[in-house]
Image (cartoon, rainbow, N blue to C red):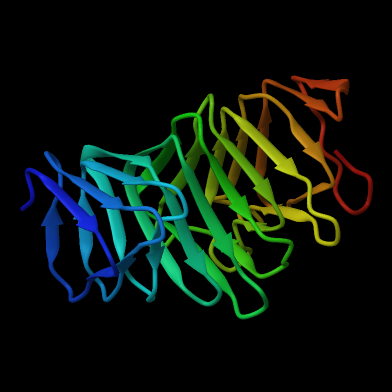
Length: 239
């Protein structure tokens, strides 16, 4: 348990193992030029994450978790998920900083657990221009909510046909990468895409097989609106 300030100062602060750090009354900070590493399969619950200058908080393994179920995790830091690493989220993460999926070809993951997982705050979840950035549930019946002032942008995948993930967009999703699209895939009867927020913009893809697409409204590229009711056609152009 930490009730004060933990800092990466003049080096790297590494958090390893499989235990739980109760940070609900504390702050974990990466100072300018320093790194806080989240390793092993440990869990950080609640509290604040922050960074200064070029300081970062970085996931370096497959199973670290930020748990905002009992106490919201407040992120005012730059969080990095490097190529081939993973980060798991549960509960609510108020992201006022940045969370960056940095895949460069080796599959990089953000897994919602114990859902629905809500990304609130006014920050951004960014994905590099790669088709192998993955955001999908890490356990059964989990879901992801993109909060009203939160933005997801870049390329890769939200959901996967092999692991259907319900996705509710109350904020903004922007596919603004140069080469690769942002694929939103709920190709399963239990997959739901619920669009309640602002625009899905630019070159995104929505892939549906047995899934449900629920729209309140959406503006595409600043033009044209899709309003309920919205009729979806199958491969044979049948409603």
